Image 1 (cartoon, rainbow, N blue to C red):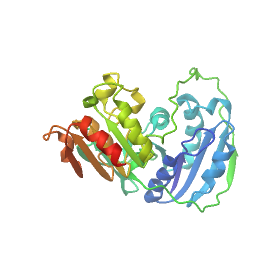
Image 2: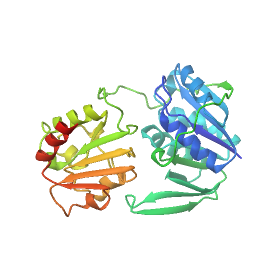
Image 3: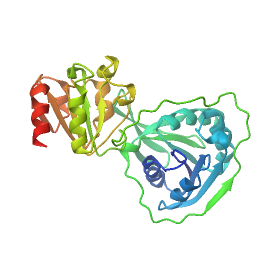
Image 4: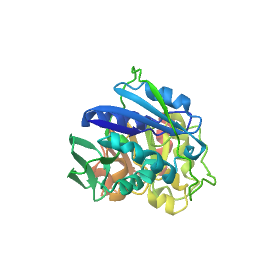
Length: 308
């Protein structure tokens, strides 16, 4: 059995999600190759080659792959598929964009956001906003799978796989990359941070999120938010944690002024330790919290900051 893992990267640094996807691939069993598709991403290919258990790194370099747009990625991956029994990608913005197109071109069903491998053809994935787990068995000749990175540990380093250059697709393609607006922050990235502190509608205003910022700086934490806080305009939507936001599983998650709607819990309930601060003792967040403080956040946060 041969498995192809599509690397997640920014053309400079290999994402931690790639190593976690390799772990999922190893649980399926067989030889694992990594495809690094990008532009001037030789360093990324070298990093991928160091992941333990990898047979070969395929490196495709071209300007059309710089942002991993769906058309270009499909044109690259589909011809390679004949040599593999499964194609895996992290369930990130990129993976969710191009892999459904690959599955459609291969005429197979995509299996999305798996959190467990039961057998080479059987996988577990969350449904109903994470309130139920579905066991899926696939009879497709090629399994096309996205992997929820928070559900797997990253594969260790220590490998020395050879790097093989392959041709990038030529195009032209109908879609092109125009531009992006990125939030600049010195804090850890939300999906990879060890500690996350999130605020909800209870924060009251955008200005009050400064209280979370100060605590986050002391803890070396990332700052997140519930959808209610984002919809209210308190913070940008790239702060959003939840079913329609980012999925996180840090060692410590602190929920402040968040009631704990199902959609939010779907994005953070796999955190190792959950702390909730809410003045409503009946808030659903306390049902999943390891530690709960029933207190007005405007009293609790200054005391927490002072203690830190």
